[in-house]
Length: 226
Image (spheres, rainbow, N blue to C red):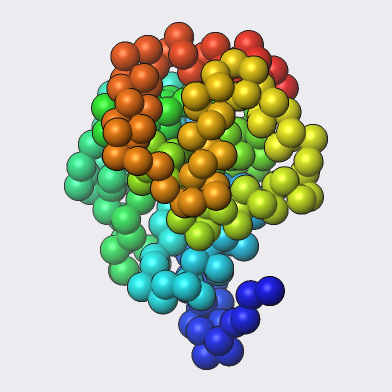
């Protein structure tokens, strides 16, 4: 049972409300362009963020977007819309109140540094948001590669999918196990302990760096047929 501090709930709700308003503003801006995009978010994104904020009031939920198509043209278009490049996949953009937002924008592949994690299916986008299957896939792999484990928000989201959308969760769990036992083992270990060892983390990243397309496509599109 999670006990919430009432003062924090008010703060958390304000943070979440601002996030949703900012996402809606960014969506309106991008919809007026030829850019094909989707937010990297899902059914239980807010649930995870609220639990994370309850544990860590300094946590700032961000906006993640995947853009499909020609990366060079998309980058030029974003810059023309006053998106300021901060790093390869991080852009600064001002909302209606002139507050600067940090937005992570990926092109075709969701990645972490040189590590390509996976490519969401552009044909399964609904209301400019990736589908639950891709979001669960993202929540399973991205924290493991980025942090070497799961934060509170990731564990909450994974548990919500497990409890409320068991068929999707079970499908991914089974296919990961049969395809690659070491990867399945690391996911299970991280969900129990939140972390994997630094050596395991390094080897996992190397696996994705060496064979990103073949390895991920094999998992996602052959074994994870939707």
